[in-house]
Image (cartoon, rainbow, N blue to C red):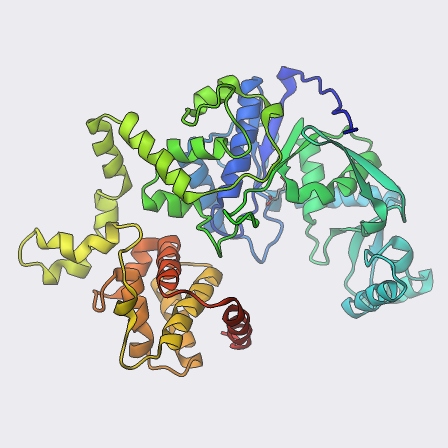
Amino acid sequence: MAPLKPEYRINPMSVRTRVAPSPTGDPHVGTAYIALFNMVFARKLGGKFVLRIEDTDQVRSTDESESMILESLRWLGLNWDEGPDVGGEYGPYRQSERSAIYQAHAQTLLDSGHAFICYRTPEELEALRAARKADGRHTALKPSDLMLPAAEVEKRKAAGAPYVIRMMVPEEGKCEVNDMLRGTIELDWGQVDAQILMKSDGMPTYHLANVVDDHLMAISHVIRGEEWINSAPKHKLLYQYFGWDMPVLCHMPLLRNPDKSKLSKRKNPTSINYYKRMGYLPEAVVNYLGRMGWSMPDEAEKFTLQAMIEHFDIQRVSLGGPVFDTTKLSWLNGLWIRESCTPEQLAQKLRDWAFNEDYLMPVLPLIQTRLEVLSDIVKLADFFVAGQLDIQAEQFEFGKLEALQVRKILQYSLWQFEAVRSWDRDTISQSLSGLSQALGLKMKDFMMPLFVAVSGRSAAPSIMDAMVILGSDMTRARLRHALDVLGGPSKKEAKAWEKEFRAMEL
Ligand code: GLU
């Protein structure tokens, strides 16, 4: 018999939810999806919705990513009551500004014996894991594996060796975690390691910062993706160690590609920027995200955010993996354009989207020298406004490049762009020239497939400037489309290419 779901008594006055993105990349549709359900849950119950930036990974977090996340959530109309930009009484809302809080809490755990200082080196950790594996045990390292004799600790301390702070965890047994949608989940302590709480750079890990902040920010319900279920035992234990009540947990099903694999940018555009640039309406995107695992009581396909709030009931979330299918999204977007826009509103939407000076100003200098009459603009600048281009495989036949090279150029450039952190002309140009050298090709030849993929023609005004204007997401989507038109790498090729690409050390 399925375990009964515990009853959740909700005090509307104290409902506080949060979305807690890490600003380490593009604003992901998955973030918008989780933000939507947190916001709707809070609004329905008259509570508050908080935005917290989890930027404890100092290497990967960027200000640019943070502002894109804020901008895209706002574009979707998912407004928060408290956050780094709007303030609130539980701030600061950016974890990098809360270091002293985490240090104090880590010290509390050290003092109470619930955490310990660990001087183990990476080599030792590897050896300890290998030893467990050889014994047929799970490789999660336990305090008993990690603790060093007191004299050794003193020696390393005196030598100023780097250390981390780890939490104590049980060696074995079952951990029960309650989830609003899944009832009681049983997890095995045997698979839970003595999690690092404070890194050697003095920054907290996700687990410590997340628990401390959810408590201090009085979060009542943690609605997040199911990929975090395995963290729940550690979090539960931390709440116990601190003597705090744990918020109610609710793990939402993960968004999936149409082939049911986890939604990933390798198969689908996952950045909100892409959908915005492509000309999807925010109302339609929010509507579609609202249908990911949830449905209106009357099963209506098209509904507003307001209607979703009015009819929201979290228990209507179904756990089967919701598929994020851009074809369905396009269909729904079409409904919104046809049924919910007057011609005047449509004109305004087109202006907001691309027919405005902000968007056109950087385009015009690139084509002005070629205009004879103003109407030439349509044929010269079409690809700056278009979404996917109508390109044919024959356009990629170049005397100087073999078909295999063409596909490699497209795929390697795509991988290269996925790793680019700041999308500007210099970075694009450097990464492409590095790649052309690594492939032993002249830059002129190397660029030919990129011209066709990005502009739909073999000669275009500066293609790198065009990429900057189109943005990373649209540029990548066009490369992906070109690869699809050419049949992409086969499975076998993809593996070999990836290996070759990694070895290039670009
Ligand atoms: N920073 C985490 C993320 O990037 C938050 C996970 C959570 O909601 O606990 O998704």
